[in-house]
Structures are given as structure tokens and as C-alpha cells.
Length: 285
Image (cartoon, rainbow, N blue to C red; front, side, top):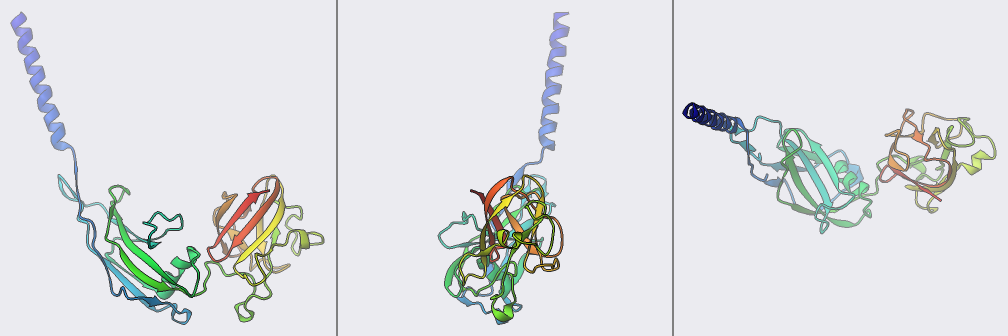
């Protein structure tokens, strides 16, 4: 009997080892890939002009990273992101810019698209800036990133903005105004604003000549939402939030649409509206 038990135990152990080996054989292992090689039609200094904003500026090309598994080359979709940063920041800048690209191995950027990168980073216009570009590649699930070599290009940008500021370009925004309207403030949704709200809920420029940055102090209710209007009695030229849950910081656009900016909570807040970057910031006082 003891011999039979030993024999059965041996058979079970061998079977377990064989099954384990089969499981190992069925596992899929990532073997790696090759960092993409990035090139451009030109790395010469670029002076961007608004008059040429729709013209192609630079075409970037890169090689396939050839992701491979033990079962062979990957059939998953490869995604690419063009990353843009200032030289010396090593792509760790909090204002790093990214452009998502489909499975293509090239992208052509217009003058305006390149200029907007620098605009969102709030770099001084009409000045040369050393900008660096690289490609980040990932598999479909976002894992296993590979990075290309870095290209450095000196770029001189022009004055631009992500969101059109109040006023009209014909008079250089000299008539620009901005008010807070909504049930997140004392006036409610009344438009035009009656006194005293036409004064207490008005936001001014950071400086008389700064047409891209508006700053003010606003008293908010605990709940509700609001919009920013640039003309009394008019909703069509309003500004609204892109994320209706972003209370203290977020992106916005010029459009008669929802969502509203959400109330940051009861109290007095410093509100900063940045048309250059297309962002807003609220700080409790």
C-alpha cells in the first residue's frame, strides 16, 4: 500500500510540473522595443509670423518602435505623443505641451500650432526660445513607453492667445470688459447686471496694457454656477468652463454653452482669467 501511495504521489507531482510548464509556455512576455528615431524637415531657427499662421511649418517623422512579445511582433495599436518643452527643463516642466497623434509615423504642424505651444507655456512673444521636441510611444493600454531622441529648435513666437479676450482685435481690445454673472454670486442670472453688481462683479485687467490677463475679487455663494460675460445683456459672446466640476483651476472657452464655472465655495476669492493660456484660477482670500 505504501508503495502505491508513493507511486500516486510521484504521478501527481509530475503532472503538476507538466501543467505548470504548459502554463509558462502560454504566458505572453514583453521582450521590448526600439526607441523611435525622430527627425524633422528642418531644425533651423524658426521665426513665426501671424500672417502665415495657416501655413505648414515643420514636419516631424519617426521610426516604428517595433514592440515585440515572445509570441511575435505586437498587434496592439501604438499611440504617439509629441512632447514640447523648453531646453533645460528635461521634459519635466509643469507647462509641458503634448500633442496626441494616431498610429501615423509623421505629423505636420502649422505655424499657429507651433506658436500655440509657446503661447500655452506663456513664453514671452517676439523673443527666440530654445524648444525641444521628442516622441513618446506607448502600446494601446498606455504601458511600456519608449522615448525618441530630442530635437532642439530655436523658435521666435508672436503674440497669440488660446481664448480670444474681451473686445475686438480692430481696436486692440481697448474696449475690453468682463463681468461675473450667475446664481453663484449675489446678482443671480440677471443680464444686464443692475447696480451695484455692474461694479462689484466686474473684473479688470491685470494692468492697463495687459489685454490677456484679468484679475478681480469676487464674493461667491456656497453653491451655484456662473459665466463670464464681456457685454451687458449679451450671452452670445460669453465664456464658460470646459469642466463643470473644476472649482479652483481649469480651462475655459468663448462659447454660448454649458457647463458653467462652479462656485468655489462661500467667501471672497481672487479670480484670475488668463486668455493667453485659456485658464482660470481662484484663490480664497
